[in-house]
Image (cartoon, rainbow, N blue to C red; front, side, top):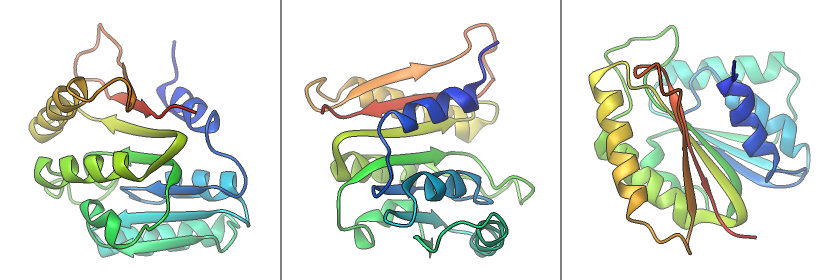
Length: 184
């Protein structure tokens, strides 16, 4: 069976190298931030966003415990404000939509901030860059977010980005992800 998390990382590692800039648009407990931090190394930088103070604190603890280099900026703000913080193009970005694992499930990512965040992220992507968006359609807002993102990406010129959806077809409520790549 396909391991979606490993496939997710495969796409990131085809673009992200030591010294690059990366963005974790939904830091959660920091697992993606840790992966990005270790991948870009001491000479790279990771920006990570979350609206929940608990997520920022949990991520800071987890990054320290994992021995990550001090190459990250944890931002307690919405991902749709990315351009207020990130001023250079990035090579890899990750969205893990939904709610904070182990947190309050009534607090989720929302279409009204996710869509502007994805549009801003696409604008900030470097050449030969990747943006992975994990979607969780098992709840109403997650399903609506996924549909909205797919509809938007279907309208973006293939000369600007290549957008691919990776989904398990015989499990309609299982998570899936979207890979958005720029040309080299």
